[in-house]
Length: 450
Image 1: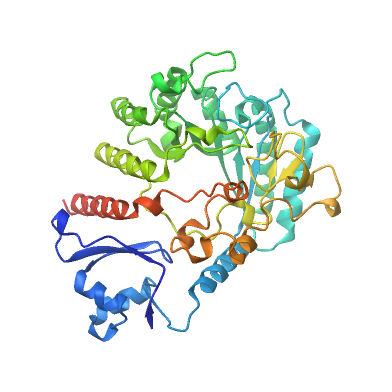
Image 2: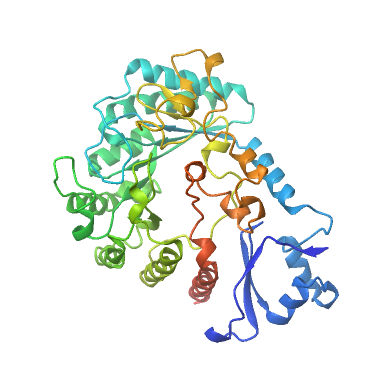
C-alpha cells in the first residue's frame, strides 16, 4: 500500500489552538479528516504499521491509502469515464432567445431579437426523443435555460417545457429544470408559472456588488440601472409559499474584477440586512475573456482573488448564508465531456459549450456541431472542446500531474483552448478552506447536540 498522491493538507494547526493536528483532504473522494500530526507523518511516509488500525481502515476507505501498484492518474480517469457512461439523466442546455435587456461590458454575445419558433421547438423535442431512445440507461431529463436572457423568450420556454414534461410523463421519466437569468423579469407571478408549469426550480442570478457597483456594469442597453429591480424580485420571489414548498433555490453569482471587488462584502451585508441569508446561496467568480472580448484585462490575480474569497466566505459563514466551501469529486469537468449533452440556440444550432452561441468568435466553424434541421449524419462530433479528456491525457496541460485533478477536472476547457488556464481558487486557498469547512462542521455538530 502507499499514501495517495491525490491528497492535500493544511500545515500543523498550532496557530489556531489545535497543536499536533492537521486537516488532510483526499481529492479522490473529496473527503477531509482531522488527524494527529504523528499519524500523518507515519502515513505519508508509508509507515502504516505505526498507524492505529481503525485510523488505517478509515484512510483506506477514504482513499488516502491505495494499492502500491496502482497508477493513480489512470484510475481517476477510468473512474471518470465509467461514471460518465452510467449517467442516467440526459442534460441539455437550451438558449431560446438571442436577446437580452442588458449591455454588460464583459458579455461576449451579439444580441438580436430572435426567439425559438415552433419549428425549432419541434426539433428540440425530436432531438431529445432520439437521444433518450438511444440509451437504455436514461430515466430522466434535465434542462438548463440560458441566454441571451432566457426570459425574453418565455413563450418558447413555456411551449417547449410543457411538451418535454409530457414526454417524460409518457416515458415515466423524471423531469428537472434550472435557469440562468439576469432576474430583471423574474416577478412573482412569472416565477409561479415557471415553477408550476415549466418545472424550473433553481435559478442563478448575477449581482455584481451593491447598487453603486452593479449599476455601472449590469445596466440595460439604454443605460438604466437594474440593481433595485432585481433585488426586489429576489426578495418577493423568496417570500412566496411556492419558493419553499417546491424546494426552490436562487444562487447569487458575483462576477468580480479589479473594479468591483471592494463592493462584494457590502453586498453580503446587504443580503443579510434583507433577511435573505437563509433563502439564497452565493458564490464568487472571476471575470474572464468571453469570446475574445478582452474582458479579463481587469481580472484580479489568482492569489489575490483566492485571499479575498476566504474573507467573503467567512462573512457568509458569520451570517449563515449558504456557500460551498470544499469542491466535490468531479467525474466530468462540464458538459463538453458528456457526448449526449448539447447546447441549442434559438436557430437550432448545436454546440458543446454554452458560451458558444451568439458569439462571433465561436458561433460557427469548428465550434458548431451542426443544426437540428440538418441530417444527423452531417454533425461534427469532434467539434471544439469535445476532445477534452484526450487533451488532458496528452499532457499538453498540467492537469495530468496536478493533485487537484479529481475535484477540478481541469477547469474550464474553453479557457485552456484560449490559452488562459482557469485553475480554481481552491488551488490557492485550500488550506484556509479546509479550516473554514472544519469550523462550520463543528458548529453544526454543536447545534445538533443542543
